[in-house]
Length: 439
Ligand SMILES: [Fe+2]
Figure 1 (cartoon, rainbow, N blue to C red):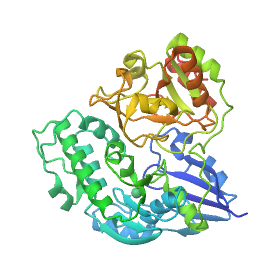
Figure 2 (figure 1 turned 135 degrees about the horizontal axis):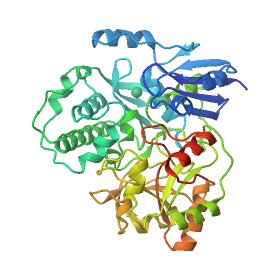
Figure 3 (figure 1 turned 180 degrees about the vertical axis):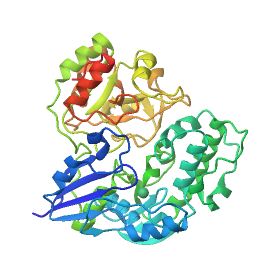
């Protein structure tokens, strides 16, 4: 069968996906190889894998993008890697969701910052029915406010979302949607508290997203684009069968571009699609957790997407407040919550509201474990399904047997300000730096 490669490159979060017919045989972020966070260029390791492909697809249309960048007063961008074919930015987003979705007939809603000209698009299956164009962009607004409050745009939006729970939505930011936000909005509300600006942009985003969902008539909805990582807003969507491919941002569009060459439903198993390591021994992890309360896990294939879902995770005993320990490792502001991973059969007992295996929603905590609960009483839960073959499933089962608690704190395994651990060497570096064992 034909080998198809899709890639994103040139702006942020370069990624590669390889399809063997309808099987996703590899998907990876460039940053995991280069160790440069958000690396915009494909890594030589990925280029080597890509060399065997019969067709190479790029995730957006360079010339169309160039016209918009000129209009926006930005420098022209480039890509290094040759492609046989390219697709539009939003079409690649839509395809990454559509061809991995567990249903056939659906609407797709793509919401991101900007690609070529489209910033929001609605699809009837893979046919685009409506779009909104630059400068009107919910994603750009969210990024501009992220910058306004002193964080890094295109990177720290999740921190803005976490900060929103500490503020009041005092400001109407909707007039900014008409502005060229590539120039930023650092001039607005000079005396405002950052928390209130975060709360204001979060509320506006949630309301706009719900309005867009109303424009999608079908019961099945695919949500894609970087804005689909806003788990607080996702949780407010009701009455839909919702699918969000676990890597809905531009990196995930590497998969979308490849899928657009094949144009058939892909076999979606799970997001463990990157570098492969030997499977860890779950009993050793549980023993370490009982002794040290914290344990690194680097097992089997790396996650494709921004969330550590147990294969490149730092696990901790959620019965203790381990903020100091984990803060030493991670760049943590106080308002950032830690997330729990829980056995599926106990999820309803410990949390109320939407939750799934990819940490795409927030739900209300019904327990007293403060270390995995946000200030507003919610948590971004990873439900570890009964049929999961992951080592995390085995760890949680054994952990429950030993402690009576079906849940662990789960955060990504990375050295401060670095991408997630990818290979055995990275894991050794992690242990060397923090004295925490990685299994
Ligand atoms: Fe995008």
